[in-house]
Image (tube, rainbow, N blue to C red; front, side):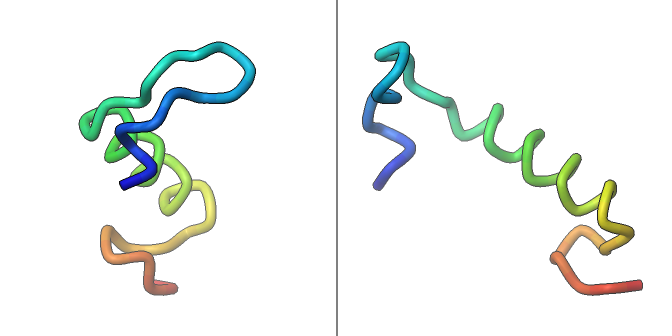
Length: 39
């Protein structure tokens, strides 16, 4: 999975917890529920 591959620019790996946080923030900013569906 892409989560286990280092980022090209920095060589860092995004953890699953970080990805979940980023996705939750993305959904919230778009006014979507926790499944990514419009409210």
